[in-house]
Amino acid sequence: MILLKPDQPIISFMSNNPDIKLKYNLLLISITVFFSFFLMTCKKDAQSSTPGISVSHSAFTIIEDAPAASVIIPVTLSGTHDKEVSIDFKTADSTASAGKEYVAITAGKLIFKVGETSKEIRINILQDTAKKTDAYFSVVLSNPVNAVLTSTHATVRIVNVDYGNLVWSDEFSTGQLNTTVWNYELGATGWGNNELENYTNSIANVHIDSGYLHISALNPTGASYTSGRITTKTKKEFTYGRFEIRARLPEGKGLWPALWMLGANFSSVGWPKCGEIDIMELLGNNAAVVYGSVHWDSNGHLSRTNQFSLPAGKFSSGFHKFSLVWTPNTMNWYVDNQRFFYLGRSEISAFPFDLPKFFIFNVAIGGNWPGSPDGTTVFPQHMIIDYIRVYQ
Image (tube, rainbow, N blue to C red):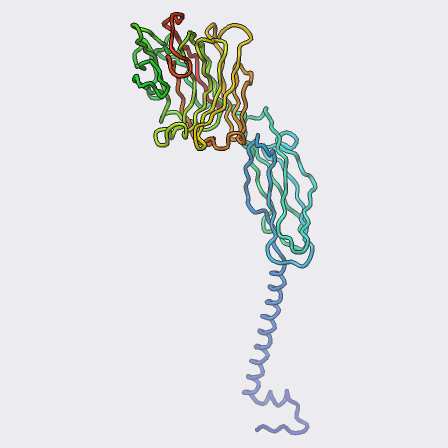
């Protein structure tokens, strides 16, 4: 035991006792470290109790002609909070312009009541037919109250569906069919429709002359018929776009010219599961009317079709432009830029809208739909194609 004199100060005593002085200094250091750690912990706990606020993704995509015509940006609050939280937001142009491609928000505010952790920002999208490329704008968050920002903005991409970029064409200007793009389909199989023709690769049935592709239907003898059928299967296949074909069509009972598309997965799933889009079909006994159609499978074959009639004349008398505009949400058929058929995704939801398809050009003879030629049918008959152009 160490005894202090009645008048001896503790500090004086410690200064005269090196061992006790050392212990005292160690004690002071321990107390200092403890309180520093305590304060840091309290500070961290205080910070962790402040929720973070953010958009759930950094990038969003909306199709220009989407039925809802709006994009929804989810904003989320992390952690618990016992105070009302608010955040300001606004839109900011990039390559998209407010008032042309979307409706601007200049001073928006979201308020999270106690217990709420999610809100939405909805921005209306406008279809700008003058703009032919995808466009971008941003949603910017700022001024959080009772929260901290963990992300400050989201980018919105508006996917253009006016399709102004020519990605492929065949102008049929060379002396023979380009077989790096086109395939001949051959044979006399009836082609699923009890047709009468034998498809050949003879220049009598398929040839290019003076910048035009000719697909010719012939009647060499008696009930013998030959014709041409070409496809772009495995060589040129497309999903969405604006497809334009300028052509003059044959006429005559029993003739069935078509410009159409078939699903690229046809070989594996068959028809109609692969989906079919008919840009143009004509029955030769009524040469003033063409049809646009789709075929698909929904527990069996389903189809939708509509027709366009020339106000005067026949499709065999001159060239006309047949077009399909196929977007992720709609299909529109045109003759000479006049729309005559429209379908939305909701009307044919089971149709394989989003799968690539290849082109088929052919002139069928006979079969279930047009019936057989008769004595009024004059041969040869020609479908003459000026060009095919694909825009995306």
